[in-house]
Image 1 (tube, rainbow, N blue to C red):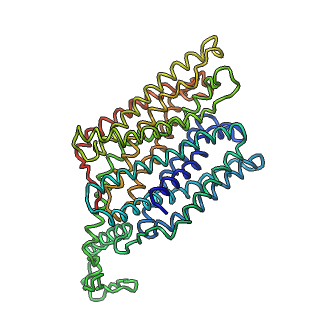
Image 2 (image 1 turned 135 degrees about the vertical axis):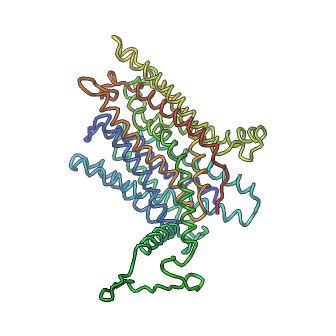
Image 3 (image 1 turned 60 degrees about the vertical axis):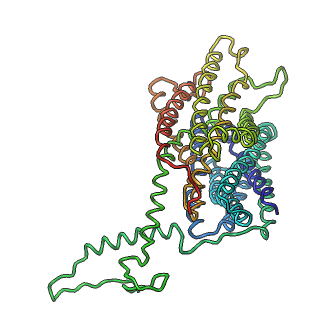
Length: 519
C-alpha cells in the first residue's frame, strides 16, 4: 500500500467522524432533550474538547514507554468506534435516558482518540523516516520531506474536517441527530478496516526497552530518593541496638546492562541520571512556548461555541429562499481556506520566501507560528466589530427586518483558517522535532495538549467573565438572549490577551534554535 495515499486518507476520515460530532455539539446541547444554557453548553463543549486534547499527552508517554504504536492504533480505534455507536444510540433513545449518560459515549470518544491520533501521526512519520533511510541520507532532503509530510497530513485532516462540518451539520439540523451521528460512526469503522488491510505493508519500530522515557524518569526519581535516604541513614553506636534493612529481595550489588558490578544506591547506569535529566530539560525549555500558545488555543475553540451562537441570531436564509444555513456549517469555511491555501503555501509562498530569507524552510518554524498568532488576533478584532454591528441591529426597532446576514461571519472564520496553516502546522513540526527520537509520540502529545489546556483555560475564562459581568441585575456578556449578549466585549478581551502572548512569544523566540531531529 502506497504511503502517501493512505496517510492523509485515514487522517481525513477520522477528522470527518470527529468534526461530524463536535462541530454541531453545542447546538445539540442547547436544544432537543438537553436544553443547556448558552454558557453552560459552551463550557461543556470546551471541557470535553479539553479532555480530548489533553489525554494524548498521557497516552503518548505510555505508548513510547511500554506499548507499540500500531497496537495502540488498533485498540484505541475500537474504543473510538464504540463511543460513536454509543452516541448514536443515545440520540435515538434520548427521551428515555438520563442526561448524564450522554457523557459516557462522549468520553469514550475522547479516550479512543487519545491513543489513536498521536499514534497514527507518529506511525506515519516513522514510515517516512524508514523510507528516507532507504533512499537518501541528506539532511536537507530529510528536512524538506518531513516538513512536507506534516503539511500534507494537515491537508488531509482539513479535507476531512471540511466534509464533516459542511455535511453533518445540515443532516443533523434537518434529518435528525440519530442519522447525523450514525454516519460518522460508519465512516470511522470503514477507515479502521481500510487501515488494517495494509498491515503487512507497514514497517514497525519496536519499543526500545533500554530507552523507555517513563522508565528512565521513574528510575531517576528513585535514584535521587535513594541517595537522599542514604545521606540520612545512620547506624546507632549502642551495641544493644540494631537496624534491619529491608532489601525486598534485592542485593546491594547488582549487574548493570553491560554486566558490570554496581551499587543499588548509584542506580547502576550513569545514563539514568543524565538521560532523564536531559529529557526533563527538553520539556522544560519547551514550556514557555507551550504556555504562550494557550491563548491561540482558546481562540481556536470559538468557532464551535460562540461563533455558532452568533450565527443562530443572524439572517440565515439565502436570498428569498426558504433554505436555512446551519450556523455550524460556516466552520467549513475554515477548512476551505486551509485546503486552498496549503498547496499555495507549499508551492509558491515557501519557494519565494526561500529566495528572500535563504532559509531551507523559507521561514523558520517559530516565525511561521508567530504569523499565525498575529492572524488570530486580527480575527478576534474582526469578530468583535461584526458582533458589535449585529448587536446594534438586533436592538433596533426594526430588528427582524434588519438582521445582519450570517455571511458577515465569514471573514473571521477565514482569518482563523489562514492562521491555522501557519500556527498549527508549525506547532506539529516544532514539538515533534524538539524532542528525542524515543519521545516523538510525546512530542505530538505536547502539541495536542496545547489545545486541551487551552479548552480548559477557555472554560475558566467564561466562568470568570460570567461571574464578574452577570453580578447584580446585569445580564452579563453571555446572556442566552443574543439581543442582550455582549460577546464583542469578550472578543476584545481575548484579542488583548492574545496580543500580550504574541509580544512575549516574539521576545522568547530569540532564545530558541530552530533545529530538529534530536536523536
